[in-house]
Structures are given as C-alpha cells and as structure tokens.
Length: 394
Image (cartoon, rainbow, N blue to C red; front, side, top):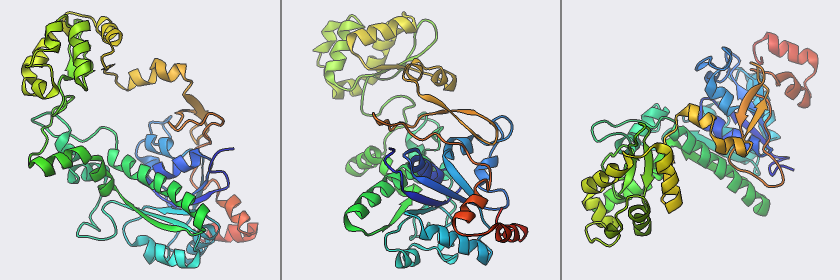
C-alpha cells in the first residue's frame, strides 16, 4: 500500500510549483484530480513540444499519475462542479493569482467554513499580503528578487540556477505542508489553511548567505563552483581536459588530500594551510598548489586517487552524463509511463520505500477524465453532453 492511498487532492494548478507539489502527492498514492482550463489547459502543456513533438517537457515531468478534468470556471456550472469535487477532497491545492480563487468562491476561509476537515494550500509568488502581493512572479524573477542570483555565477556575472529552483522550492514546501496537515488532521480531525510563497521558499534556501550578511554586514562573493568560506572547494583541471570538483570540508580531509594525493604531507600541519580559515586566507596559493598536481593527471586517475584517500570529489556531468550515469542504471531508477505522446521513460522520485514503489501512472490528455469524474458526481451522459456543448467542460 502506498502511504497516501485513500487521500484525494483537487489541484487547480498550472506551470511548475503547484504541479510539482501535487505530483509528489500522486507519487505516494494520492488521487490527484487536476483541474484545467477548457481552452488549452495548463499552459505548461505547450511550453515546448520536445516530447515526441507533441508534449512539453515541463508537463511530462510534473503531471504523471493525475486525472485531468477541464472546466470553465467563469461559468456557474464549472464552479458548481469544482465545489462538488472539493467537497469530496482531503486537500485543495491552488496557485492562481493572489485573490483569484477567493473571487471565484474558493478562498481558504470560505472553504474551511464549509468543510472543516479540508486542507487548503494556497501557493503564490510573494504571499497573500505585503507590497509585492500582486507582483508577477516567475521562477527567474523570484530568483532575482530573493537574492539567489547574487550568490550564483562568476564574480563578474550573476546567473540564475539552471533548474527552476524557486518553483521547486515552493513545491517542496507545499508538499511537506500537505503531509504535515494530513498527519495533524489524523490526530485532531481538523483541516488546515496553509500558505506557501515562492519568495519565502527561496529566502529560506538562502539561509547561510543571508545569515552571514546579517552577522557580518558583508554579502557573500559569487565564486562560480567555489565556496566563499571553504578552501580548497572548486573545479580543478586534469591532463585530459575534464575538470574534477574537489570539496575539502574540514582539516582532516585537507590532511588526506595533501598526504594521499598531492604528496605534500608537510602541509597538513603548516600553520599557513592546516586550518580552513588559514586556507581561505591563502586561497590563491592553495588553489595553485592543487592545480599543479591535478593538471598532470587524467580525470580517471585523479578520481581514483581522491577516492582512495577519502577526499570528497565529483565529475562534472552534463545532462547526457546524468542520463547515462551508472548510479541510476545500477539502482534501476527508470520506469515507463503512458502519455498522449505514447510511452515515455520517467525517473523514479527520490522518496524510496522498502516495501512499495511510487506510482508511475500515465500523463493525462487535457480533459481525459472529465466524463468519468462527472459520472462519479452523478452527472448522466445527457447532462455531460449539454455541459460539453456549452463549453462548461471539455
């Protein structure tokens, strides 16, 4: 049995953050009914057509194991159907513009008054209050506003993270918030109103950087693959042109590096290098010392020697390297899921139970489950036909 079997989630969602949260609930067994617009659905369906020329990659990543119901919420009939779905749900998750759900009649306060056991999760860019409440909030914009780009990139150029980290961070907190609310409801019988904003999520993930700034008055330097307060901690060249990342986190690892790899055991106790503070102060000399040795080794030889010495290291892979990674292959991390574009490979989620496997159900076509879900609500075929003709459902 998957841990969330028997839990029903109604998700009025689009793009990345909310679909990421609800997909994780679906992975763990929850029934997720995804409510989409009748005129094209979740716009992430068509961000691109890279999946066999027919489906967006974001949508394929975020929407397996869900049921799609297409409703026109501008029509009273569409709102009635959504209200009926929510009445039978355990969790209602939405990421419309701030205030939009309430204007449609689906604000947290009104829903909780009607359904005390319901868990309502409202997701937004900046939260329900404050001067930025109505500001547009896309991943790149929030990465910039919350300071993430200020600590990412080279000393000369700030860059955003290549993955949509603001969306992912918010999705993770909505997911864990839903789990926490479900656990509490199991004890108290009461639902919950939960708010998650992308801005707050990234602010939390900026923890070390903002605390360092608050306590020292100085903003961290951008250091590409390096680290502002640890050394050596960077990418170092090899003789075959493939850099290797070395991350020495403490003085024991420094001793292992200089003794087992660099051939300079004397530096383990040299006061200019023996402590991390000393190494950070002498970063240029430390990096030059490491490069003088690594540049004469092949990547494979350097990785072998670092591993034998117990020094943390990693190869720099691109997405091709990740797809072919032996760790994924050896642990059988790929499955196949259905989709409107045909069978697709999909990677298992990282939460791995010993006695059961995550649900890896199909990615739905727009409105694929509308008729079936309406039938569950007691709508006859003739009524569904009239709703379809009126554009209320699709």
